[in-house]
Image (spheres, rainbow, N blue to C red):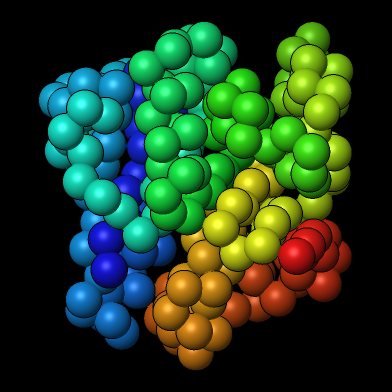
Length: 208
């Protein structure tokens, strides 16, 4: 099963925990394959200056069972990039797609969140405006929810901010490979209590 992580200049490094969760899950399901996809293959400068190398660009990215769109300050640029938005729409038309943190803002800009519920990052440092409020103001066709994650029919998932990328990725593992895989991944990551607490205190929104 092929998972793609979409990255770009200005992604927050913590959002690459999506890759880390999938890497841990491979200990349980070795058939999991992971690749990184960016607007162009090669070096990508994350928000703190850390550089990583994307395996593929959007023009040569392989078909994936799921693509996870990461977040970070660079989302404002990607939300205006026609090539990126076109790629998002193509993925949505053919397979599962998810976002974590402000990756949801890129999905909103592509139009695939219209006419249904979605979420994104909430908490910021003043005078920055909450991305959740920006989504609500700039994309009125989206039913913006304050939630840990929002799942729409199993094929479209938007996750909340920053560290909730871990919870969102675990949820996606459960959705695609079975709850036992998600639970066992959380156990070997020593994340069971945190995941349980987040679900109890900040429940996901699941719709058909």
